[in-house]
Length: 367
Image (cartoon, rainbow, N blue to C red; front, side, top):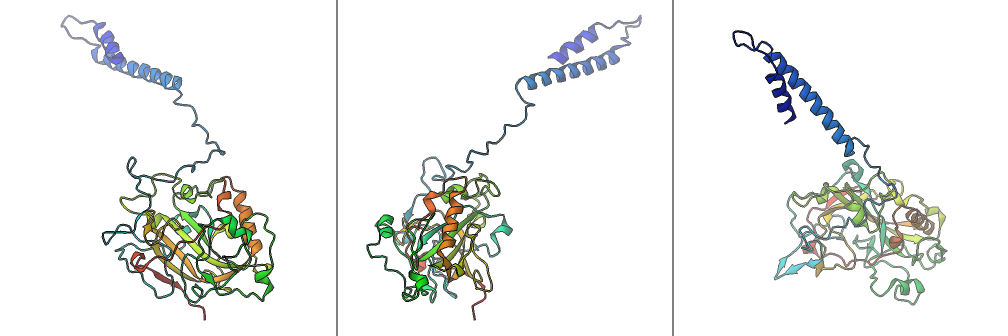
């Protein structure tokens, strides 16, 4: 409207010669339009400035956790998509592939997962970073000859206080074969300063969830619950098209705890130990599965699936002080990780028909 008004003023104020030709019409219209554009631009600048359009963006508060509450429960409004579901109903499998599986070399699950393949390279090469670390009492996976039905360790059915405090719902998984009740490094108690409900001689399976949607490289990279870290940033993980197994992965490694500083590692927070000399991380099963935990079994399955799993097939010795240093590092994180500094219960071994048929045998067999 302002441009029209300016143009009309300039045009109607022009004069005509004796022939009726308006000699200054074109030039005056050009001047009027230019002046109107300039005036409108100045007015717009004043308006934008008044509304704060040119103010610098609000600073991100480094003390505010951007991942808090990011664990998803629904896909559509109130549909509870991610709630546990019956694994089989009316003889029809209701879910996608599950974990933890049999990772014995040569094993293949019975569920046809089509063209879904796990991440076989380093997670970091695919933009994933660790967003949590936690562990389970005993191994959730099965590796025959390493952690299996013939594994041994302290008797978890005794009345020791740390087992009582863990509660009756804490299920123990498979144990390794290293335990020797006559060797003091397996039986000498350790004074735990940061971890709770831990025991020398016991087998634990550590999980390091990784995600491309994590707050990678920030103070809030590590989160409890791990779902908050996995789904921290929106727009990266998708169900349609399905890319969860390309954007979410878990590293898994099984240890027997000893009271012996010769087996110390002070950087468990960083992820799976890779050491060819001690054969750590050199024989790794890779497949697609789900989240685990004792709320799932072969009747009730997880809907947080499929994700990539990379599981060390071998069981290793680790010092109790290594775990305690891990817990110390966790408790120093910006997010409260106190809910993960003790062992969680182990899921029952996933049945053949719920295990993916895409297990990749990566790594050399120990000679």
